Image (cartoon, rainbow, N blue to C red; front, side, top):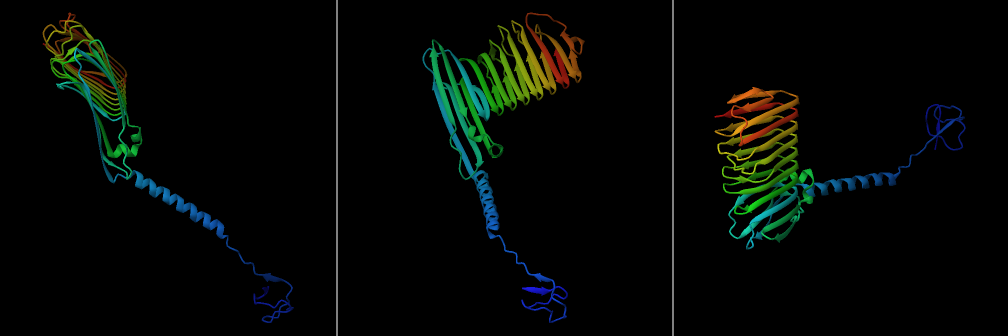
Length: 345
C-alpha cells in the first residue's frame, strides 16, 4: 500500500493528491514486509537441543552418584621344590603395595580393588592376566593389570584403585613392579631374602622400607619421573654387597640409613634428582665406614651434622674409612638442596 511522502498518510492506488495534506503524489513509500525465515530458527533451536542433551548425558555418565566396589583376587600356589620366585607386575593406573607374609601354601597372592563413586554406568572389572612358569626350583609369575577404563581425570578424582602384591616370605624373591600413574609402597620383614628389586612409576611417589634382618643379595633400583622417593635401610644383611640406585626427575629424595652390623661387602648407594631436594640421614657404628660425595648445579650442600666424619661438605669420610664393611654414597641434584646428617660411633 502506498503512503504520502509528505505526511505519511495512506493513499489509494489511483490517487494523485494526498487527501490529508493535498501534496502531489509524485513519490510514494511502499510498505515492505519482512518474511521471517522460520527454517533457520528451527535449525538453531534443534542444534541447541542436541548440545544440551549431550551435556546432560555426559554429566549423568560421569557424575559420581553411584557407589563402586570391585575386587578381584588371584592366588599362585606354591609347588613342591620351589625355593625362589620372580614376580613381574605391571599396572597402568593404581597404587601398588608390596609386602611379605607367610601365605601357607601360596607363593604369591594378588588382590585388586576399586572403591569410591562413579557414574550411572559403573565400570567393568579390569582385566588381570597372570602367567606362571616353573623352571627347576624357580617360579616365575608375570601379571598385568589393565585399568584403561580409569584413564581420565574425572574417574580418578572419585575412585581409589589399589593393588596388593603379597609374596611368601620363605622364598628368595626378585620383584619388578611398574606403574604408569600411582604410588608404590614396598616393605620387607625380618628373614626375607631379596635377590633383586626394581620399582618404577611415571607419576607417583615410591616408598621402600628394608627392616632389620632383611638379607639383600642383589641390586636395587627405584625410579620415578614425577614424585618423591623415600628409602629406609635398617640393619640389612648384605653379605655379597649391593648397588642401590634411587632416581627422581621431579621430586625430592629422602634417605635414612642405619647400620650396626657388618656389611661384609661394599654397598654403593646413588641418589640422583634433577629438580628437587635430597635429604640423607646416616647412622653407622663399629667397623662400618662410609664415604659421601655430593654435587649440585644450582643449590647448596648443607651438612647439618658430621659426628665422626671429616672432610669438606662435598666429600665426607668417616674416621674409620676405608673398611671392608662400607657405604659408598653419591648424592647428585641439578636444582635443589642437599642436606646431610651423618654420624659414626
